[in-house]
Image (cartoon, rainbow, N blue to C red; front, top):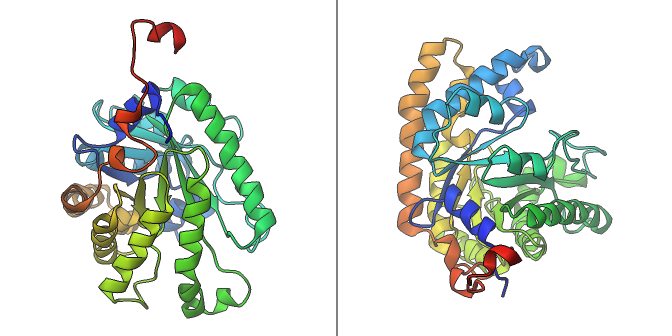
Length: 331
């Protein structure tokens, strides 16, 4: 049983609500956000435009979330500087470079140049997040990705800050042209991925839903798959939205939390339609009403059904080494 350090406890408390449930809104998108803003010419979306969208997202949604996930280029420092992020809302910051190196079937995550765990800790963030593309059946590539996770994990232990990992499966070979075939394999991929990644020294798993609800609609089967995911994960896990529409993500969160998830870390499902609105006032109106209401509904759902993070397997507060009057010397 892993004993959790005081800094990681504090960080996890900051990114979860008083119930111990993560209700986190993701807005660390970079390349994908540029595509949402200008689908035909994403490369023409300017820095100031990206920063403005992050400020709008954060100011409208952060008050309704336990934490916000931001990127270091367009969002994290800017939202702090402009007071868009409330002081009582947790802050996660991504550490990976956007996209991946290698070809589409052998995707390698790279850390962002000039950015590291020490800087994330120093800026006052509550936790570190990394996205890795992952296929457990591609052994050599999986080993490289695991090594990257281990590298960041050791830095997070050194700086005593929580570490969240977001593994994303992707289609290869004939799966790329057959979405149905990939959906059939997805459950096994997500479950195996959860088992392998959560066995590393991480604190929270940000998992995909272990099925494609466009093809699988049997709630009993889906609940069973999420229960298997819960058993596979050695650490608390939250559900990502993966660009699903809001109605689908709501159902996924409900099923996942009933099965043992400790909440959600959703992004586009909550706010994506706003990015196609050119008028700033209309965009903020959508974010402040529709998107905010979605976030509140999801939070109520997760709190009702979710499992508090400290009740999940490796991380148990009661297993923490008792503090003594000498703890400050040993820390």
